[in-house]
Image (cartoon, rainbow, N blue to C red; front, side, top):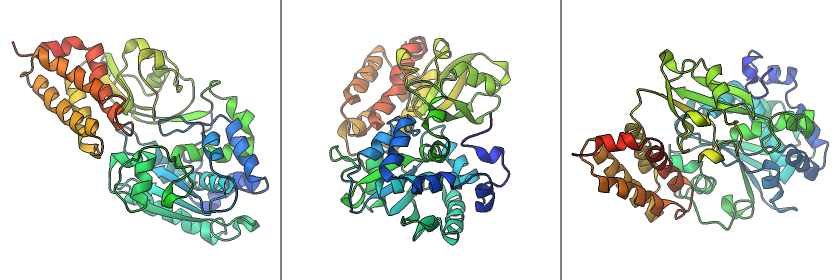
Length: 411
């Protein structure tokens, strides 16, 4: 099957505007501009496209929350790709930036926005420069700016760099950062659709989510829902890394099993036995062999106590020390906690401290109880999902590999 998102793998130099247009580029925008904005939103809603950043919220429904009528509104592309093991958005913007630009312009037209921001992860300077080149091409061709493609629709487009904070992948923290405030989440309501950037209605969509929009407009929602499953339609870019023969990005139809994904990537590196998998980088609970036949869908891992998330698969072979793996993950989340919520700020500190004691052979059975207790004191008590993510690797490794924890205890 030809790629729908990673089209640069099939079409050489599609990152250039003329090549992109020669291969059907901006046909989706042109079609959208001939429609009523509300009808564009209806098409996206009918496609059952859901957010590809991890949460899986229906995209058309999110657009539909924006108040109708005049007034300032904004579209923000969330390219703050900071989840461990995730590198899909980087490749999209490197190889096929115009499809993301086109998707964002369609979103702006649908909600009545005149301004789009792409919020880049702070370390993505080179990607940002390449993206700016694509924006220059669009301005010169009348695709960005006044009266786009000869229509009454006008819209500007700017890039903005974050400072490398993982927390700014959360939409309200991103909005605060973009506005020049501390990159910390706020308590909802208000929701961004009502009061977002500069207190105006705002849509925040992931980079991959927006890349799905142009082909949906061109081919129709029925074409999109014919792929995948009833609740998880379309295609998904899966990031495979860790102990795997062929790490990289794989574009697959939703519903593909995790075992099939591992086979596509050549299996576990060096012929070793599979041990465990982080299905959403560090933010998803670890899964083991019995979950590999589950489908890659938003609900596929629910019965195994995990989530698809951003579909950044980190594979671990039989040599992996699971206590060490959990310690590495909790160190990341402690470092990236914004500090606003006491359970997250203090809880991740103590999780790392106690887990390090266990890993280095200084822990006791009481420390295992402390780990479990602290995790449950964090769950459900934070403004954003970072606290929930932080406890996932600890609780899931305790559940699946209790013997590895016991083996490290003192005496």
